Image (cartoon, rainbow, N blue to C red; front, side):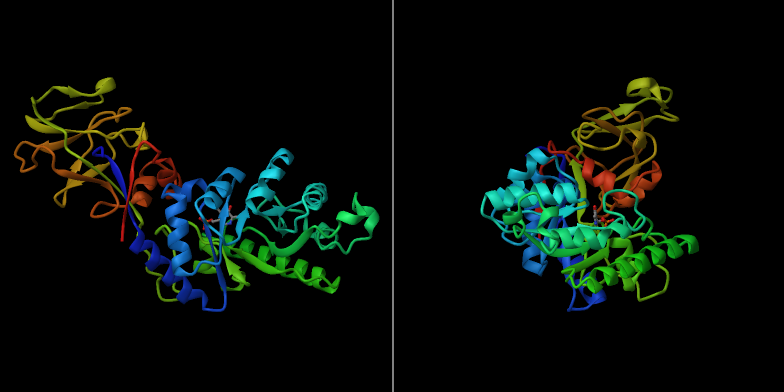
Length: 383
Ligand SMILES: *Cc1c(COP(=O)(O)O)cnc(C)c1O
């Protein structure tokens, strides 16, 4: 195996799951988002860990992601969060995914193809209460719910015999600023939750059962207990990162699941005044030693952190110096160093600052850092 690898601490994942479980109580379900290869952690292995620890469903963004999980033997429900093309409906049926439905045309298409295939397809109604992305408007929700439930009059369904091919299994919304404790964001989230509750009441008063009701992402697990409903969908929290958390509860203890490691593959002396790497952005301020590390932006280490990060070797920090290249970067070891060739290096996570700290350095979020650690980097699973 090459030097650069992502250690995936499954024990941390399990601990994070338990911490969330304790917070939300045993009566609620936990849906584990494993989209984008489980935020870069490896969807199938995370799915298995999630099953072992008691997840009741998984969530993906694409039909391909859901299909891979089914091929890997996953049996529990898999929510399809993003809108697919109609041409992907056969794939949805084949993999037995549970799509979010935001409009009647898509519900109708699903219904017809499921009926033709002789299948009953579970779907969740998605309501846009203020995220401004997918979802029907709150005003449209009761009618769409009725349509999905097959309780609409049969003329609104293009094939009256196919009207029962959908199973109205759940109702969801998504929150735009649930991870922020700023007063105006707390207000906005509470307005979204209120709107969702009112819309649910409308659906219920139309005589329909909304199924599993869910709204909470990681931010809402931390900050908005009234968004927990029947199920929560925390992603980033399960992978070990959390936003600010004022003293609503005792702090939730989560640990980063991903650690990026490599090894020193070359050490050399650098004279005062010499420059390192492309663009000559770093000039040695004194005679020093530099280490070459075989990791670069081609692995997903952002080029923007050039000259803005430090790696850890034997528990000590060493600054990355010069531009990060596609496959390599350099660390300044200082004039006197105990670092030796082949020593192990932690780039982030583990005993180094985690992906959230790295993200903040360059104005992004930990999601983007872990998602971008790409398939050239082998994942090593540790318990
Ligand atoms: C990605 C996603 C989540 C998880 O979000 P986190 O911020 O990682 O907790 C939940 N729900 C939907 C609809 C999503 O797309």
